[in-house]
Image 1 (cartoon, rainbow, N blue to C red):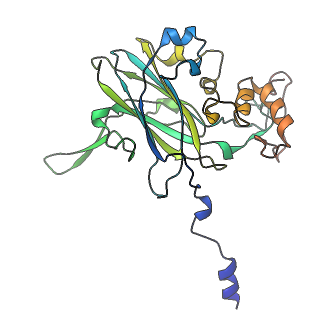
Image 2 (image 1 turned 90 degrees about the vertical axis):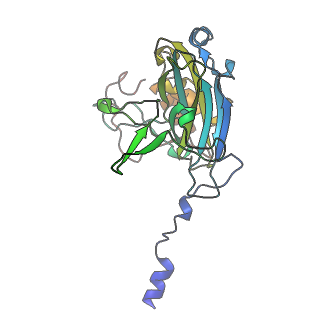
Image 3 (image 1 turned 180 degrees about the horizontal axis):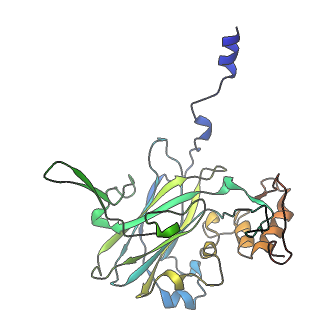
Length: 295
């Protein structure tokens, strides 16, 4: 009898509860051609993403019926002979609340992780892409077998991103923007592919909205694409609403106002049906006024 009871109340190891729901958002899609925005025009516009629909795409990705299938999206662009800056911003916004004043304990509320997703961006010459755009995701890797029969991995990804200590081959985490510079010197008129692979979908709706853009920066890097006064997250606003404001993109606007703005917004919306922030169960040390709290 005891064995029967244990069997009835035992743990469920199927993992079905963690699988995303199927929606009408495509699990694999091809966005077509992205036309690089001229950096001077971009800056002159006030960095208005919606004014460059041919250069900044707002789209979304969903789950596939095959839980083991790699999902994501591709797009392509043509080399200009100069540097091209690629920028990706996945839904929605992420912050980490510090509990102590040392190190900057500024955020008084915890982020709601359920509305966040994660995409990883790579890019390379289309000739080296192993996937089938709109059908199956691939990468920019190949295997070379030498005369002795030993296999060697060849990497053709040119979207190089660095992490702590200058480590290469890294990707940003949850709801965090990614960017890289692709040098197309000697490759003007040659087609490149961007591959956006899904790392995680938002738990609240299984739909990962995002914005991706390409900018022609000439002989410069990505610095001028971003405003020095703003967090990189604020470059493409309202990606969660595909360019339109929603209840979830409001928290992004508050985040872009600074810590005081976000703290005020979270305090006002804790009683919402689906609050965008979580009140911490741990004690919070506000630290020094006007420093850690941002107030």
